[in-house]
Length: 545
Image (cartoon, rainbow, N blue to C red; front, side, top):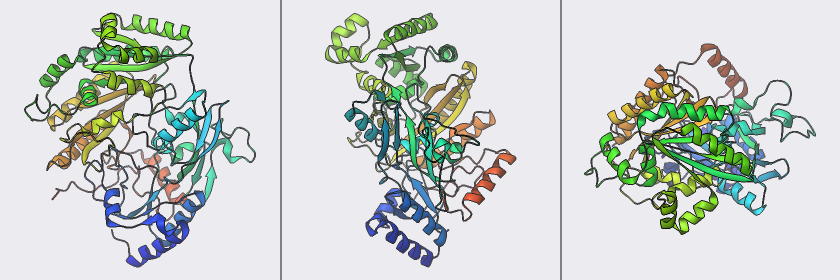
């Protein structure tokens, strides 16, 4: 759908007056970059608008309503694997919130920080280091330059005991599509002393309405931080066989239920680990794809990792950490695998004295220290670009120092189903994902996260090279088939890409209430049309030229 030219010209003129000429861009090159993701998209973008404060966000939305021009807000635009900066709907102007990048409040006694949507993981980490804070932030495995608010509002997760990130926020300031402003929780009360420390206030809680929705734009949020523990160690467990997964899930789940382990626990399959260590083994496979299980097994034996690799942090006093380690060792005794513990001090020694460390511990870190160190950093709230390297899995080019999967035409589509923390059910899900991806010609890179003691969040990576003809279409078919099979079996996603989920039949009463809310707060439908609207009609798969 193309909007009347007069509407667009009028809207652009008003936006320029509101935010400044230099903050409204319509150049073809920039718009092409914005509408490029890590998979095939067809949506047109009309402009990029960069407001600098809340008032300008309000003005931009009022202009959008007057002109009938839809807008799509982004924070940093690094939503790789889910759509990057591309809107789900047609003919949207991008509302780029990266200029709203202020840390508004910080309390080193109660452990919270209040930020705007342009504040990144790197910015907050640097801030806490400079303040010599006694708190850590929670970090995700995405780029250090991703938005904190953007990830929280997508209900993303990290690596520490505060890994359920949306569960650690409060006091949202929200600009509604009409330009009105509201605050949530205790923040809505004048002179509230608990605006930054109490989630609920009194009465209905509205925070969740603005997560994974198109009902408003969050321009301020308070995020709770984690006290730096007296003692920290990481554990790494390598399960040799695929058949170990159900029992491994059961053991780790029970340790989480008992609060022996408190952090998010990440488990990756062999394909996921290999993609973290190197790019596709073109030489070993004779340049054929996909890498089949027998080839994967040979590489696994050669490089010395398991069918499944689990890792997590152990936090507390020295005595608490020692006891948690003992209980974990006892629980995993008898498994066909290897359990190792690593502290920051031991890692530093291992880096300096790799050969003696191997002789003493039996653990050869020379090949794995590059991946172990960033993972341990994430467990301590240190953001890293290392996991981003896996987006270049099938690319023939070397991974650049400044990775940008959109620019470099990396193919990446993520699908994120959730399973109960039941070993048998998790195995059904991973087997389904493995079979589907291999059938469509892709390596089944699978990660599992025990985000809570009762659920396992699964992320399936469909990684490919967009420069190879036909791969975009094949990846889309694979994604859609995986989505269909997962939902048919009851494994629904915790998060969606801009492709949506047309096979999800939403509950009628639930969908009706959401539609009534949308019609009330956004009567002209100008804010992020199509975002998290289930059963939407999506563009058909089209062949690339």
